[in-house]
Image (cartoon, rainbow, N blue to C red; front, side, top):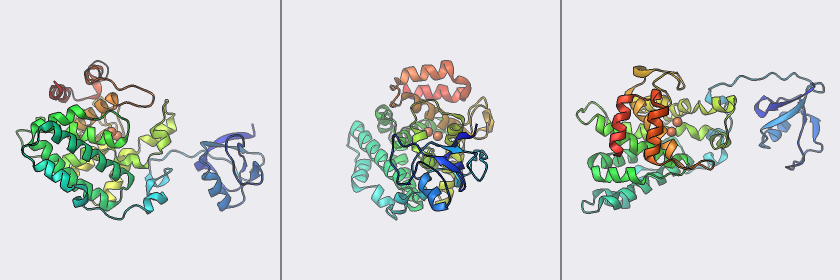
Length: 339
Ligand SMILES: [Fe+2]
Ligand SMILES: [Fe+2]
């Protein structure tokens, strides 16, 4: 067979390609031609094709499949290289993120917990939405400051925190997921570490809120694909912990707590997780906490291809079908914060 479909990142100058012409337009003179310049190559790569047909016989060079690498530099559609990112507002301050409104809400002793929790939740989602849209180093740092304050409020006021658990939103965007996992993990940490002052709860909160920051460098088509992922797509998704680590490091915002949570939130108790297939106590308790909150929110989130599960059903599924993935003692405490 002289023709084969290859991935766009494997395309090279000298290859003879066949462009599909039925469902998109392009401004090449022909659908079939040998690529003779880097400019042509770049132009083809902007066409957002998943794969492209190469005629090996007519090509000057052979196609050699590339290995999937977890290195951030080799991944497609990095937000850092996105022109929109270049144009992002240069700098925020925690002042901007922590608006007067929110300050007043947090300080208002008389405000009913229900109202307070709705205001804090909405603000948190808004902040994560902005951060994931414009994740500059300054914005990451400013967001961390704001998360410290939100976390103080959640720690100090049990009623507000409990109400926030009830309103966690069930749509599928990474920013609501970040807030949901953030709040749920803070609540579980509060319960577990209540008799200890050996933990920096503000940094923990920052780690929980930012656990999926690396997803900004994952191809949105893969991230939101409503079908089973192939091996390559799965490998791509699995790089997001390391990408989050790198983003936080580059922003000078990588505390040990953030590093642990970002890198370990997909490790599983039975060693089936990623990226390092750690087991049981090899996984730090911060990672084990976040892993439970993460799966719980994924199950209770609504997606384009699935309905949200009710919290009770999600907890039952986790207990009956997935318990080997979790630290069982932590899971028992997690259930208690819901009932
Ligand atoms: Fe994740
Ligand atoms: Fe997550």
